[in-house]
Image (cartoon, rainbow, N blue to C red; front, top):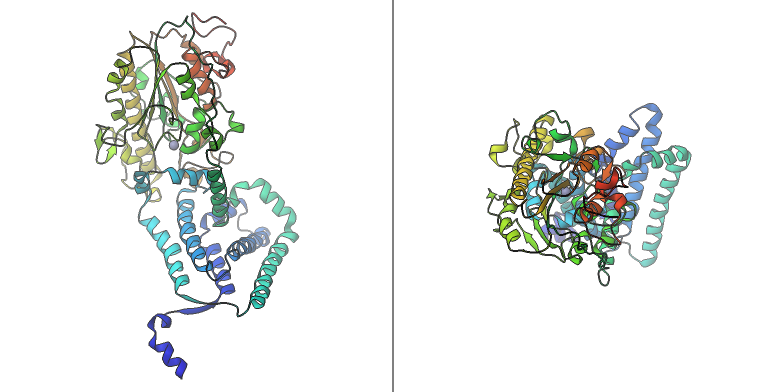
Amino acid sequence: MNNLRVWRSSPAAASRWTISHGNLILGAAIVLTVAHNAAFWGQLLRAYPLAAANLWFQASVAACLFAVTALLLSLFDTRPFLKPALVIVFLASSGAAYFMDTYGVVIDHDMLRNAAQTNTQEVRDLLNLRFAGYVLGLGVLPSLAILFAQVRWPGSFREGLVDRSRRVGILLGVLTVSILPLGRTWASFLREHKAVRQYANPGFLAYSAVKFGLAGSEGRKGPVRHIGEDARIPATDKDRELLILVIGESARADHFSLNGYGRETNPELSRLPVVSFTNMHANATSTAVAVPMMFSPLDPSEFSVRKAQGSENLLDVLRHAGVNVLWRDNNSDSKGVADRIPYEDFKTDLNPDTEGGEPRDVGMLAGLQAYIDSHPTGDIVIVLHQMGNHGPAYYKRYPPAFERFRPVRKTSELGECSPQEIANAYDNAILYTDHFLAETIRLLERNKDRFEAGLLYTSDHGESLGEKGVYLHGMPPFMAPDEQKHVASVFWFADSFEIDTNRFRRARDLPLSHANLFHTVLGLLEIESQVYDPRKDIARLIDPSSPALAHKTN
Ligand SMILES: [Zn+2]
């Protein structure tokens, strides 16, 4: 009776519920396995459809997912850590579940790197009611339940040890019993359906976070490695080159009418003497990886962002050769590529073409003539990093005059849009890139008497627009669909260029990748250096024996 009175006198205690630490872990694991893994179950059912023959295996996968999750949570099974750890897990995992369920994306360490480098505007585009619903329902509510729980802890160290050992032992037993009898099915599942396990939540998220953390802590150790310090422009090259490199965003090759797309998405470029490469592929599917890769001499097989950050890149080689280099950015940033060269952020007041808070890519051309005029000697290379087709709010990426494909639903909840509405907004943004590139070419045209002027445009990666339920980009390259890797790429050269542009024309259908860009730029600028590999220069892929340039001798 006495106890009851105490209990009643404390409203906070009255609202609490009691649970043992072990059951809290097991309960949390059940909720995570069931409610946070819609994408995982969807993928599993795609690989192993509902049928009597698959039931045992599906049950075995469910038991394993639960056991692995419970074992992971058991790592935090101490009084000070359990509640905070569970709250962090539920909040993070609810966000991951939203992105996996909604966009079919996988949260790997590159995706986390992307997220860490995302700017506030990109975040605003991604947040919506559905996201809030996920975080509230799957994250905040369970967290509140956990915070209010009165957790029973073992009375003594010995009791705790026995209790924890017994639970871990049982969970390991569950794993063994579920896997062993179906060993062969498991082996083929892990081999043939690598993608499915990447949707396991929060297990894969935890793995990615650790991998991302380790990569970050290795950081930029020591000084940056110099490359191409021998770069020089031979005395025979008397003409000045002016190259503009446009780094596109999320533009897929098959939505360019230059490549045969059924809709007229390149009305302006198609009237200009451009070369569109129909078979250009990115070796990465996220901005944070693809952009450093485009400027790196490393082969894609040995590339890592850490290595790229620890080394100079194409722009440094140009600098060593005495080229004037400038980076203008209307995307997130240069991903470290422009760390040692002049950099201008065009998501600021610097951009005169800002509409409803959206800085337009065309704004990056403002004052560019003045920059060119203020450099009376040497070659000039200008990089323009576009906002392009950044999703999911494609409808924000173009001025109203470019809304030629209708209807467009003005929401970033792609799940609410019909495939046609998504394609319409996406294609309108391509139309605007078409215009931006044509404007850039017109600027170069005006300088062609003083310069050998050229434009090299390549998108950083492609984009999924709902094919097989996948949206956006950022899938690990080995499992990414072609839509995320097959990118738009268009070159243009003024007739003042001494190069035989037919060489590019003839290479237009060859299989090319971002790895070709490094050497193609060096070749165009006629830069001599140990780091230049003519075998990867697009101008030399066809008929490599003859010199690409009229006056070049080697
Ligand atoms: Zn990108």
